[in-house]
Image 1 (tube, rainbow, N blue to C red):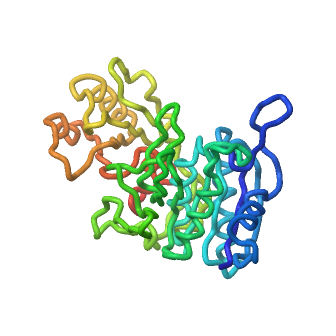
Image 2 (image 1 turned 135 degrees about the horizontal axis):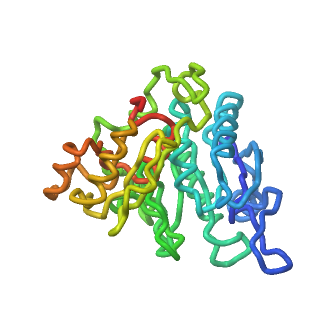
Length: 331
C-alpha cells in the first residue's frame, strides 16, 4: 500500500520533556515503530508531511483550514490508497467533523489516528490505532473521514466522523452515538455496521456537488472551500440557563439537548428562540433521534422555530453549521 501520513502533533507526536510535561516533538517515530514491529520489509510506503505541530487543545479554524487544504492537495497529487492524520485526542472529534464537511468530494479514506499516552508509555494505544487504520484502509477503501481507536477495554473500532461523541470527562475512550461504530475488528475478523444511519442518508455528504460561497463571497465547489464560513454559538442545555449570551455576532445557535433529546421549552428555550428570531438568527437543536419515542416537549420545538438536527453527533452538527451546510443544504 501507499499511504499519506500527515503529522500534526498531539500526544501521538509528543514526548515527556525534562520537566515532566508532555510537549510536541518532531520526527516520524510512529512509522519507525510500525516498521520495527509489523512491517520489517517496508511493504507499506508512507508519504510523510507535517503542515504544523501543536498540542490539539490549541486547534483553531486556521489550522483546520490549513489541514483540509493540505489533505485535498495530497489526495490529488499522489496515487494513494488512503491518508492517515496523526492528531491529538482533545479536539479529535472537531477536526474529524470539520474535515468531513470541508472535504465532501474526497476520493479516498481519510483516517484520524491518535494516542491516549505518548508512544513511549506502555499504556499508549497509538501504534495499535495506527495499525488498525492501515488494516481498515486495506480491507475497505471507502471515501470519507473516519477515526480509528482501540478503547481501554481492547475494542478496536472505526468511527464515522459524523457519529463521534465528545470524550467523557477523565476518559480517553472514543464512542459513537447509539453506542455504535462504522466497523470493528474482532478476533474473528472485521464486522461492518451502518453506524445507525438509514440507507438513504448513507454517504450523502460525499456526493453533494452544488456551488456555495465562502465567507468572502467567493464561489467554490463543495469540498473545495477550506474556510470555516460561519460563527456558531454552541450551548449545552442546563438548568438555570438564560438568553443573555444571544447576540447578533453569530450566524446560528446550536443547542445540545439533554440525553433524551429534550430541553426547557417553557423557559430558557422559549426565551432563546424568541430573542434569536428577533435578531434573525436560526436556532438548531441536536441530541434528538428520529427513531425514539418523543417527549411532549419535542413537539413544541417547531412552534418555537427551532430546527432539529437528528441522529448526528453534537460536535459534528456544530462543525456542519460552521461550514455553512447541513446535509448539503446551505444555512
